[in-house]
Image 1 (cartoon, helix red, strand yellow):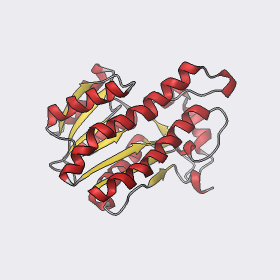
Image 2 (cartoon, one colour):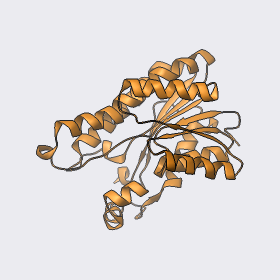
Image 3 (cartoon, one colour):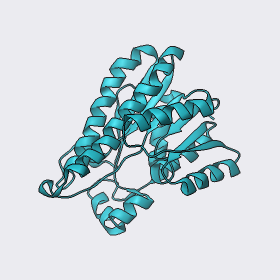
Image 4 (spheres, one colour):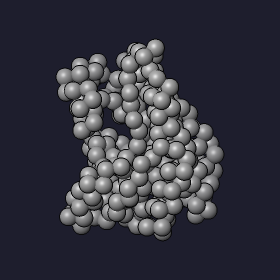
Length: 248
């Protein structure tokens, strides 16, 4: 129960890696704030957590800009009193040739994948600094670390998040707040299976030493490790949870 007495806000946690992380954190004692734009799925995640005697609340949030990020931060702090752990998980991904990408696609991905985490941190971390403790874990991607055709906007937005992770570690680490990131490889979620299909995920995963697609719970465990006191000396780390793809 390493998160007993802690409050964790997880953006984009109505499904996939976010939902798995919410359930895992709740099972380890955290009061979890589940957020997302689908109230039905959000309340299902909360109901599942509560059925196992966990603590969870749902906040409807359509994250798209600084205002929406600040609004969610304020609501979460009002519901729980404080936020000890922030998981920046909400993201969107669109793939295709650079010449085929539109300006709205570019703007939307950078808004949700970079701008929203930026202003969530700006809204919530100062209170952590005042208390002298807190944790931020950003959810990146393995493709932020190497070139892949067709992922230019998505990969570059997550590379920006990786850079922010290191900048925030330098900025907030001296004040007791740890900031790290997890970079997942191919993972079975509702979204990835719908967007890519199982065969495409398996083909992508086969390039890595693990030779398989991750389950969302496996990524959640990596997030939980970075958020726990077991990782107390880790600052500014991009933890590759990619089945070894970054090693080859």
